[in-house]
Image 1 (cartoon, helix red, strand yellow):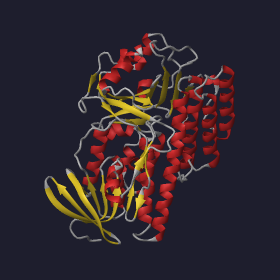
Image 2 (tube, one colour):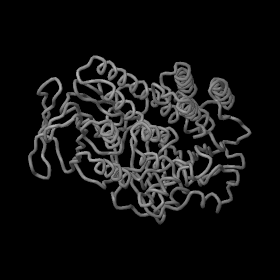
Image 3 (cartoon, helix red, strand yellow):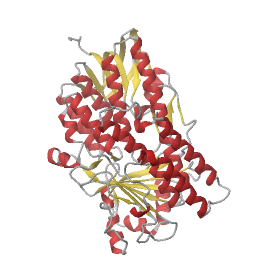
Image 4 (cartoon, rainbow, N blue to C red):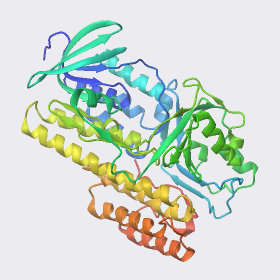
Length: 504
């Protein structure tokens, strides 16, 4: 279909990976797309972890929209073979280590303070750590190569509805004013500000059980955690992988630390802290104070330096947020724009891609102004809010239980059960209605029930007894049995799970 100059079927605001992939899919389906970016690439964005779910969705999008580049990025081996210059890291699974304040890390031959959950059988087929400055720039280049109109250094000044199927958009591009028209607008900014300004939405943290904030950056020359373990005589011969090749979680009294390593000596690291900021210290002061309380972590950062970008530690307010609505007449928001819980368990990339997959399919299957589109967008929103509720339950329970590692490992298994259930449906050819099977009533009920039991068990007035903890663990193990195809919570595994993801 021919369009007048600067007139499009879809305008997408925000060119992170989700916005760019949505643009690629819609473009292949025959629509005209304009991708608008306020800044430019490459730009700093904190490192993130892919997961088996994210990789499955990438492959499905590649198949449905003839985008072979997405498939090549869905496994570490093919990424390295086809995009060796695009920085990423090897991610074999999820690793969790419990630390105690003012004490060197301790464990034993039974891995009493360790949990490793493999997500792949080998390096070739593993997940990846995304160095977002490179990956986002790559997806934008793919969009440009596909002929998609891409406008960077572009700020949208006003949006007005001119007719039932037309938005009038005024923008400035590198200091020059321009006028655009679009039938539909997708908010892929990753922030609540755009839709608040132009569509009258509101955003809040009301209703979330999780309350966390972060201090983070990229670093160079962070010492290897596996080297520390080997040098100090910890047992690693039964590990399913090198923990430095994983989404590495260090559990601390005030929260937890993530560490994601890339192939070029860069490490994404951040502290995610439970509760509000009560001291108003600078990011550097708070980071240094917390790290100094944990000798094993402090040693890892002894020779580390801040990487450029961003060349500084960044500090957030509360992470939890949710729009009051994520769609309206002629517009919709992608998932990370509409809400967020917490980086624990690395749900970000997969949840974002699930949103792209769903929204694009709705927009292709329905017409502007058609009642069916409005109905499907309502379902899209309802599903997202349910997914956010499930993630919130999974994450907040982990925060509550992190001071006792046996409880933490039992509750963390609920996340992996949800993931495996979702993966198995996709492997069987069914695209689940909700991320992590949030609308599977039996599964959601288990998570909700054991979140409540955990609250009762550790209610702030007293620590649970060993008998109470053992009973909780046995009850969780029994409850997940119908979904537990991976042999999780087997005491004989000693918290070392060789492979839990489905064969892909």
